[in-house]
Amino acid sequence: MTPDDVDGRLARLAAAVEDAIPDTLRAEWDRRVGQEPVLVARQGIFSTHGRPFAYQLSYRAPGQLTHAAHAWSAHQHERATAHVLAATFGRADLEHVAHGRLLFVRCPRAYLIGDLAVPRRPDRLVIEVNDTVGVDSAVLAGIRRLREEGFRIAMPGFVSSADQRRLLPHADFVKIDVRDLDVEGHPVVDLARSYGALLVAEYVENADTLRHARDLGFSLFQGNLLERAGILDRAGARPVSL
Image (tube, rainbow, N blue to C red; front, top):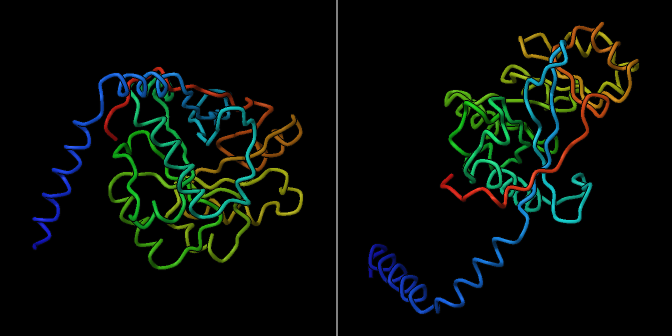
């Protein structure tokens, strides 16, 4: 039996199973799914003039206000990213989320090397390299390919690690935790901008850190002082093909 024969049999089996589902059961399933929230968290990234430049999107589950992503497995990161991408780009009315601005989404290794697909929206999606990703040759090749396709690349939590220095020439945005600026200071900031990336000050929680980041020449700012992450429910938006 050839692979095409196997695929044909599986397709016929799937169609038979689909046809066997009673209309009442299908309607009940659709009703239940339609009632479940489809959540995504959104926090603004602002310009020096205080205008929204982009949004950071992250995973939220019903009843969950925060998440300990640092303790997740690779599979959990992948599932969370899939949820964020589907809730955002897999639903109609994208501009209800984007408002014409860029959308930053942290993506684990599988999305970078092509094992999992990203939505074909380089006009909106900024691929933020998850800070747990080891930057090897496969990751660099994947990032080059994504940039050739028009995607922008962001790097969070820059502290000049070896992996980050390998990624730096390919980054359009580099994020630095402003809580580290007293320790890191000018050398790390100067290195972060050395390939022309726009610098994003992360975790801006008070006016002093905002002022310090501006003095160091940051272009963009993100943190609770400017806007706390809000929760969007995308359940009411019609599912569309990614």
